[in-house]
Structure formats: C-alpha cells, structure tokens
Length: 140
View 1 (cartoon, rainbow, N blue to C red):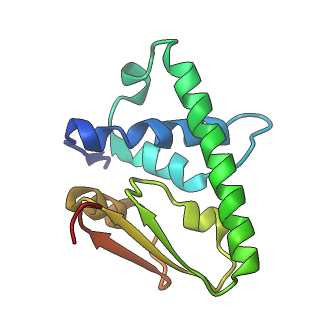
View 2 (tube, rainbow, N blue to C red):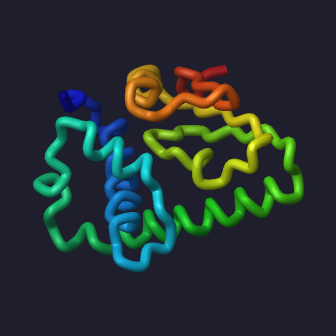
C-alpha cells in the first residue's frame, strides 16, 4: 500500500529533487543511480507525472540532477580526506546522499521538520550510522 502524504508548500518542494533523482536514475546512461529515490517515489501516493508535467520543469529537473552530481562529488572528496567524518545534512528532505557517498565509516545526521523525518523513517532504509533529527534548521 502506498504512503499517503499531506505536505505543506514548503515540505512539498522536497519532491522536486526526489523526482529529478529518480528520473536521472532511470535514464539509459545516468550520471548517478539513486535506488532510494526510485523506491521512495514508487512508495508514495502522489501523482508526480501530473504535478510535474509542464515542460518548464525540465530545467529544474536538470538543475536538481546537476546539483546532486556536484554535491555528491564534493562530499565524496571530503570523506576521502576525512574518512571518519561526521556529516550533517540540513533540510535533508527525502535525499539519501548517505547511500551514494558512504565509505563504511562516516556518521551521518539528517535534519528536517518532524513530518519529513517521520516520512523518511517509514520509507528509507535504516542504518546504525544515520541519526535523524526532527527539528527546524532555525531552532537552537
């Protein structure tokens, strides 16, 4: 059964990069493969195709994919230089960068609103080295 979601306008914006990563991952020669994005997208009761049907979204999706490549590469470079690093992903949404960059040693913190963290914990595979924090980035 698919997970029903009721997101505010701010939280709904996390679906754009999720959809972009899934689309890129399904291409014949993708720049990256994000199995989590595909799995999460397929697990949600949300009409992605209807919501993102306009051609004006193509550049947005391309930008999200390009940002994923850039941030993944920068994160991997940092982890290579600091193999025991602790990484904090602020406003993580439904991104599972951890799975794309993990070296088997890092500790990873995901920070986002409570409803988003609750959704992550239902849909994204758990790992002992990942700590999810339900909080606003603006909270002390």
